[in-house]
Length: 108
Image 1 (cartoon, helix red, strand yellow):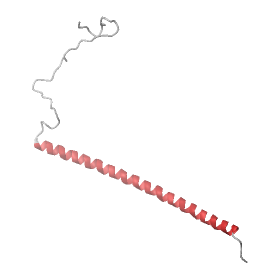
Image 2 (cartoon, helix red, strand yellow; image 1 turned 180 degrees about the horizontal axis):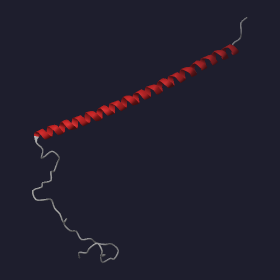
Image 3 (cartoon, one colour; image 1 turned 180 degrees about the vertical axis):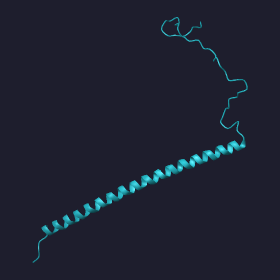
């Protein structure tokens, strides 16, 4: 039983649709390529390879630039942390010396 989308099947709950061939097909003589590059000349293939290489190199340059930027940021963060820890270490050494002076018996 072939029905259109407006009618429902015998169960009454789900519409059944008729499958039809598309009204327009590819014009005669047009061939669909199964994979890219099958209809290209050797020169076009070489140009495509060159274009892909240039694109890859450009992306690589951008990625390297971003990597260098992140590395600089990381090194600055580490340098800042080193400065803070050096100050903290100096204060702790001074505190230790003060406590040693207080706790050690004085020889007169």
